[in-house]
Amino acid sequence: MSRATRIIQVDAFADEPFKGNPAAVCLLESEAEEAWMQAVAREMNLSETAFPVRRAYGYSLRWFTPAAEVDLCGHATLGTAHALWEEGLLAPDETARFHTRSGLLTASRSGGWIEMDFPSKPEREADAPEGLAASLGARPVYVGRNQFDYIALFEDEAVVRGLAPDFTALRTLPVRGVIATAPSDSGEFDFVSRFFAPAVGVDEDPVTGSAHCCLAPFWSRRLSRTEMTGYQASARGGIVKVRTAGDRVVISGRAVTVLRGELLG
Image (cartoon, rainbow, N blue to C red):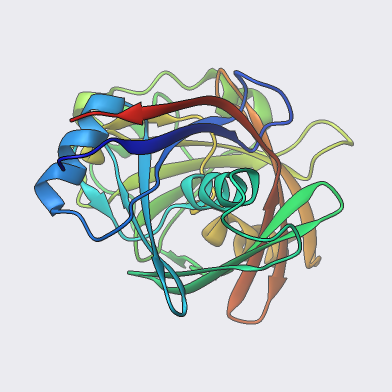
């Protein structure tokens, strides 16, 4: 890339700076080389860097961790939509349309929240891989697997909050990551979760939108509800609202811009 490229850092699933999950949004004027995008993601050293490119039909969108390109990312999609509205690249009431490896994803504003239409990624019950309980530091009461991840259900919130995983061991599992979840102890939330993805360079992701493509149908079946509120109990923490709708999941969160700059490399 020979000219300066605008880059925005957004805290997604947050209503104040330095909470939620930070994502970098690199506002490209044209398609970039994959190796360059991966190098930018390593430089930014956040769980995800997003690369939107304006098209006649909306935006193409790709996401990179510091180590790899991924097929689906919620918080960087939320951050990208927020950045496009904040930078005046989308009208305030315009729906963001993103064409991605996971098909068409949309985002729209609704009462201070951003609602994203994502594919549902339900799990199926699976045998726990050897060493999973030891790697997580606690034994789950149920294990499932979907297209991307294992999901491990624990009896109560305290267990999930207290997990101290062995990331080196988790890195050997043949999946993107592991979702740990439990019912919430508070009346404010329906469930809590954490997400560990050392295989793609992210030991613990602060707030993971794409994990809620699994968590939404998972908890909908158990709670007999279509609308729920989850809390991802990482050190930064974040609130995620979900609504199941057939083979789709509506994921809602807030976002805050924390940095604007130019990428010179």
